[in-house]
Structure formats: C-alpha cells, structure tokens
Image (cartoon, rainbow, N blue to C red):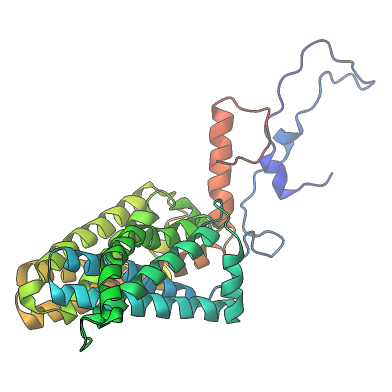
Length: 356
C-alpha cells in the first residue's frame, strides 16, 4: 500500500446507514483507511513553493512609500489652503506632485515599458484593486498637477492676465480634488497587497489599509516639518501625532490578530529588523514633533525620523510578504488548523480545502 502526505488531510468518513455486505474474509465492516495513514510534518510541496511570489522588485515598495507621501502631502496642501498657511500650502502641493510623479515613474519601471502603464487605463474593472488604483493615481495626479500650477500662477508678474485668472479659478477645485483622492490613494496599495496569495499580506487585510494611511500621514507631516517654518507647522505636528498613532496602533493590532505562523515574517529576518526600526523612528519622530516642534532643528530631525519610519514600514511589510511565499508552512499550517476546526465543528462532508 502506498501512502501520500496529503492523506492526512482527508476528512473522517461519515457513518453509513443500512447493512453492509460482508466479504469472504469475515472481518466485518469497512476498514477506516484514514486511521492507517500516519500524520506527517509538511515541509515541502514536491520541493517547490506552494505560492508563486509576485515578480516585484524594489520599485514597488518605493512606490508604496512615494504614493503614501503624495497622498499625505495632498492633504497638507489642501489644509494649508483652507487655513491660509502659505508655506504649508505651497510645500504640500509641490511635494504631492513630485511624489506622485516619482511614484508613477517607479511603477512604469517595474512594468518594463512605459506604454504598459498607459494600457492599464484602457479599461475600468471595479473588482481589481490594480485597475481601480490606476484610476485613483491618475485622478490624484491630475488634481495635484493643477494645484501645483495654481501655486506657480500666484507668482506670475501679470496677475490680471488670462492665465493667472484661469489658475485662480482652478485653484479651489484642485485643492478639493486632491483632498478627496488622497485617502484612497494612501489605502489602495494595502488592498492591492492583501488581494494577492502571499500569506502574510493576505492575512493582514483587515488592518493593513489603516497602517498605510497612518504611515502616509506621518511621512507627509514629516516632510512638512522639514520644509515649513515653525510658525506654520502647528497643524502638521498634530498630523504627525495622529498618523503615527494610527500606524503603530493598527500595526500592533494586525500582528496580534494574525495567525502566529503567518505573522512570523513580520518579526524575524531582515523584514522584522526594518519594521522594528520603523516603529522606533515613527514613535520618536511623533514625540519630537509634538514636544519640540517649535524648534527648527528639532522639527527637521523629527520630520526626517517620520519619513524614514514610513519608508521602512513599507519596505518591511513588502519584504515580509515576499518571504511568506518561500516556505510552504505559511500556507499549509493555517489551512490545516482551519480544517481541523471545521472537523471539530462537525463539518465533515464538504471539500478538504477550507477557504475563508
């Protein structure tokens, strides 16, 4: 008789009703084969990974950071416009446009050829985070570009000319548009990662969007602290605190609620080191911004710490997800536990594969 490691996944056979015809051996009853197959320790899937890792390189985590920075800076620019803080308005708008342009360049480089990025705009698929995200990125980029142009229009020598007047008219809608598309731009990349088969990313789907939104706000507040005068950085100091609190709180909750095995890459290896450094830098940057943000040097150092913490968070989460695709245990062990739980709950007549 041959045995297969997957025999251990076979559910118990339900009891049969009625009389059973006996064979000539006279042993009585059908043998339960599952009792004859020993349990096994799963360590390989014929020597291959169960989950194929996405073909993404460092351009993707770079975009994750720049996209968040752009979204947060869009909010800073809109807030500066609403509260008549010219340094925040100008810095936020220019940072948003620069970050979204650099992030788009990183995406185009990852795709290999720039025209492939344009091909993503040929259709709208609401069930695809990548398709929806492409349109969110494009819309935000358009509003950010108009807002930055309006900022340049304020410096034109002829303020009574047609161009200056047109840019003044376009200024408020551009500010509103940037503010409206900033939250989905900050969050959709987390949805995109969670929609893949990488176990760590998929398991983090409940909390990762909140981590990324908080990280985006912290990074943008950090950049604003770095480039803005201290007499106008009051709102971004509060933004730094709330963004850091959201990021750190959501990240801790995410790790606690994830399966311990699937959360392992978030603690160990190079990804774990990056994420620990990110927590320290984000926490220190937020405290420095709140306590010492009125000092120019302290505000700048706090801003650098917040931006570095945000970047390390994105790279750490990215690397943890990629690491979880390399070992079959991150896929098989949680599946087996879910399967055993279903058996314990009395579900024994459906597929052996448990899908949430």
